[in-house]
Each structure stands twice: as C-alpha cells, then as structure tokens.
Image (cartoon, rainbow, N blue to C red; front, side):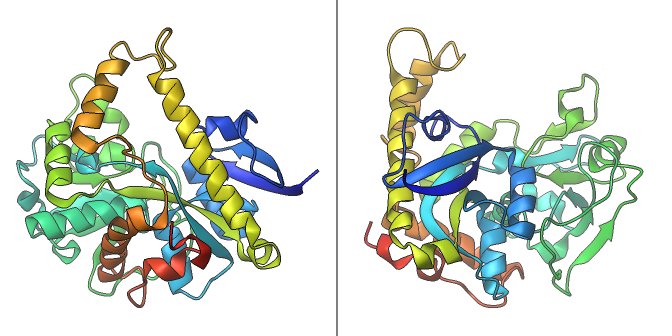
Length: 327
C-alpha cells in the first residue's frame, strides 16, 4: 500500500487511465472522483476537499495572489480550449465584429472564470476592446437561480456591473435582447433552439482560432492540477509522481484515440481530425511540463493581473513547484 490520496478530476481521454486504474502513480494509492468542473472548483476552492485536484487556473492564481497558499501547482493542464467560439450575441443587436461590443451589455457567469479571462484578454489584445468599455451583467447562466462567484472576489472599481435577479438567467436575457452578448465556457441553451436570436460572434470559429494560434502560438490553458500544500511539504516526491502519472495517462489516452480498428470515440472522421490537428498544431497539442507552457501561462497571468484578479503580476515560477521547473 502506498500513500493514500484523493483526486478530484474530470473524465477525459487523457485522465480516464487514472480513473480506471490503468495508470497508477508510483507510491500512491489514488482514489479518483469524477466531477464536473463547476462543482469541483467550488468544492476545492472553498473546502480543499481533495488532496489533488484539477482546478481553475484563474481561481488558483487569484487565491495565490490573495495570499491563500493552501495549494501548490504542478504543470499538468488537462483542459485547454480556444475561446473565439465562446462569444455569443443577440442577432438583432447589430454586433458583427468584436469591436461592436464597446458600450454593450455583456453577460458572464463568473468574472473569475478562466474562459472569461482569456476572452476579455483576446478582446483587448487582438481587437482593442478593454473590459472597462463593456457593461458586465452577472447571473445564473442557463436556468434561473442565484449568482455566486466560486470564491469571493473584489471586482475592479472601474468596471460597470449588474447582477440579475435569480428569477431569470443570462440565456433568456440574451435571447430576448435584454443583453447584447454573453461570454461563457459553455454555449447558451438558446443557441441550439431553432428560431432563437442567439448566434456565435465568430460563425467560423475554427478558422478564427487557428489564425489566433498561428499568430500567437497560444492554445489557451483552462485548468491545471493542484496539490494540498500540507501534503506536498510533508511528501514532496508526490509532485513528481503525480506529474509522471498524468503524463502517462495522456500518452495512453492519445494512443487509444489514434488506434486503428473500432474508434475509441464516436466520431466518424476521427482519423482525419487527428491528422489535421497534427498538421495545424503539431504532434502534441496538449503539452504538459513547465518549460513547454511557460509562455502561455505568462500571457495568461498578464491578462489576469491587468483585469484586476491579482494585486500584482504573478509568475509561473511561483505557481508551480520548483522541482518541475526544468521539465
């Protein structure tokens, strides 16, 4: 029996080998609980429920900047996603370009959400639309309910903000034209409803995202992995063992996706997609490790600080344990 640790994490091709026990970290008896990101992040941020957890990169950086050092990070990034696809507009609002968002009312489920940081950063860096030029509307996303940030924050003083009543939701307000746009990690329900007034700002988001990657080399990181500091300080070897296990799980997941025969995922053109992905982004679009991700993490932290989510500019070096810096 090794050291008994709990892991809270989503179930993805790159983490399933940890969930089913195919990959086991050396010296650790790992018990993985599969959760959705929203639930997991709230539970981890508030109660540090899991010894090791997939965690919002933004919330981790925010807590660290506030002096909350309950967690240490390892350079494992199980979730990445381009975010041009994540800007949704009311089709009658006259918004054809990102620049048209100036002065508009834009909904968001949480200010601290990593997806939101990237979207606001892209709007400012790529299109000259700073967050102060938008009126931000916060509330429950796809169904009526109360609004809560997963971890308490103080919003920047120069932001114009509104919180909607819990009797409505951003999806309904967007469809009705009471707000002009929404940014979110998930699509509003109205997007898939025939005849709705909701569409993506970038209809051909794949081309927009590939162009962004070509210009910047950035595949935006959404989530990282954190370990309770008390465990790391008592057993520092755990950090390397967990990195190695996540790396092996990712390798195995990629091999399962690429295997000939019956497809691992229910995608008819999976092979063609993987070949196109390798052509556009190289053989490993999901790199782990400190050095391979330093530029992307640094870009994120610059946006994070500029948007008022950290009182100072944090560095990648302070967020991830020293023994991983040479990886």
